[in-house]
Every structure is written in C-alpha cells, then in structure tokens.
Length: 442
Image (cartoon, rainbow, N blue to C red):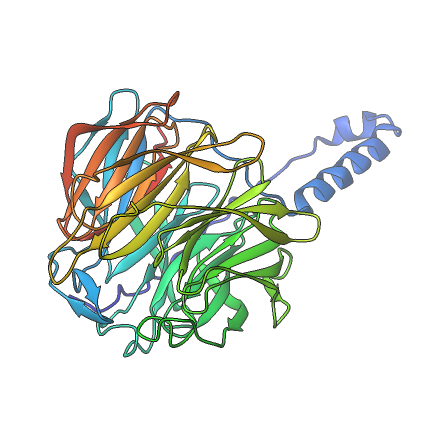
C-alpha cells in the first residue's frame, strides 16, 4: 500500500459557448438597446466578481456519510501510537434521515490516517488531513499532508485531485472558510496553524498564512509546548478562532477572505482555566455566542462574541463530569443541533491502565437569550472512546464514532427535548475518528 495516494493530473474542460449573430437581426436592432445590454453585462460581471459565502444547502432526502479513520494505529498512549488498524482510509455510506436507514460502509478513498474531514460549501469537494503519516507520534512526526477529493455524485466515491504538505506536523483539524476559497489547518505537533488556497477546480494551491505559537501550559506531560487543536472562522468570515490545548488559550486572528492571510502575528487571546486544554470550538447559529470544549478539564466554556471587534468574553463554565468521578477525562467533540436549541459534546474517560469509561455524550439546552447551558443528560455512546460524533443536517440522528471499539452507533434525536435514544443501527468501521455529511445529488 502506498504511503500516500499518487497525485493524479486532472484534465479540466471549460465549456466554450459560441454565439452567432444574425446579420439582418443585428442591423434591425434599435440603437438604444445596445447601451442597455452593455450596462446589463457590466452589472452581471460586477455581481460575479464579488466574493461570496456559499449558502447552506437545503435538507436533502438522502445523504452520503463519510467516515475518517486511523489506518496505522488505534489511539495515542502517552504520545505514542498504540494498537493496530485494518482500516484503509475514508469510508462512505448512504443515509436516509426520514427512516434512519444507513448502508454498509464502503471504501471511498484509500489514504493513510485521514484524521479529520471537511466538505466544501458547494458540496462537490471533500478535504482530508493525513495526521502523522508514518504513525510515529506527534514528537516524531516530520510532515503531515492535506488531500483534495472530488465527490462522485452518483455513488459518493472520492477522486483524488491533489495532495500537498499542510505546512506543519500532526495536523489534526481542518475547516473551510465561508467563501470556499481557503482551507485552514491546526498543526498539533509543530505548534502552528496554516492556510492554503483552494482553486476553482477544488484542488489545493499555495500557502497563504502560517502562524507559530509559543509558550507552555500547566501540565508538563501534555502542555510542554503549544498544541493548536482546531481553527474555525467566525460566522461573518472576518476572524479565525484557534483552540490551543498546549497553552490554554483561544487565539483570535483576523482573517482576510481576499488573500487568505491571518493577522496579527501576536494575536489577542482569551485565557481559559490552567490545565483545561481547549480542543474544539463552535459558534451558535445566531453568531452571538461561542462554546469552547476543554479536553483536559471537560468544561464547556460559554463566551459572548462581539462581532464588531472580534472579542470573546467568558460567561459560564459548564461541567460535563460528575463531581464524584475519580480518574481523567478527555473530552473530544462539540456540536450544536441544527435548530440551535441544544449543544452536544463527547467525553472519553479513564480510571487507570486499560480501565476505560464511563464514556458519555453530554446533552445541554441553550438559553435562547443568555446563551448559557443547562445539562439535560449524559448518555453512553454505545462504545468506547467517542472521539467524534456528528448530527445529520436534518437534526434527526446523531452518529457516534467510537474509536477503540471500532463502531459507529446511531441515536435518534428528539428535536423538542434534545434527548438521545439509541437505535439498533450500528456500523462496524475500524478506528472511526471523524464523520461528515454531504447531500446525495440525483
């Protein structure tokens, strides 16, 4: 098996349109019509030239569900890979949200350690980061890669467009800006964040930004250096929020959607509790609040977002861990229900050597005015080590990816209460670590 998929050359054909003008019709045309047509053409060109954010797609009757996996190991134990994997890359299933029926996963693209996936706003391209391609561990990883794929609208299979270095090591996260022109990446191992341009054909282009973090955190075993774990643009696409687990900070960069640049070099930041380890971040649907999930403390911090000047102000620390729990908690993923009323987060817990659990998916209600959280329930994820989960775009089901047990369990979501009910649908996928949805086009 090749270490990386070979970059294929893609022939791009741009349709040409030939227009014939009838001579007699041209001579008969009124002179006043020509200026009007010229003005209309100029207006059309002006509209096309304006960069725009892609609108969210309407709910579909059928979706492709993509699963990223670790192919070289099962999980990281004290910074070193542990266990094995029979996975070969990115898998895809068909999903019907009206019934909850999901097909058996099939290999969509063979690729090493596709740890995190992101879909272009136009739903035609998928991007994957290869985290730790030699499966050596963050301290020994010397290069990570990002790959661009075209999505086959008929069967969901992925066609490789190109693969480029991410500009960092142990790249564990990527996201796409609102215009679909840039991919932003968090490089856990090299303490940096990078941005690459996305070309019109969906392939990856040149690097447009590189930012290096410095410092350390409270816990010397996990925070001896910065560890950016996620990067996400604000709802207006003017800022990028970086969750840095290693230094207990949320960095707020200005993002230039015209050039893909991040600024300033010394970005303002919000401190979180020492040893908290911010991992992932999400904005609410109205763009008024942000929610930071801390991997090491298990807290979800609620922050007020001021879009006019790009500032975050801490408001609440919501606990995800019972006060009588003895052990360590590694919280993992966070998401808000499409209706904006509920927040979900996953927790991986350890009580000693090979003593896993109790793992949970936490469900919280969101105050519609204050943005604060109130716990509704903590639900077993149907497996061990729920590194990732995803709510389908209709809000009907939650897919829980359980890394250690190699399974994905479907939960029915009550849109009125937010509560989760496990279904009998379970997918067997070796070391699932990321899930994302794409509408199936007919």
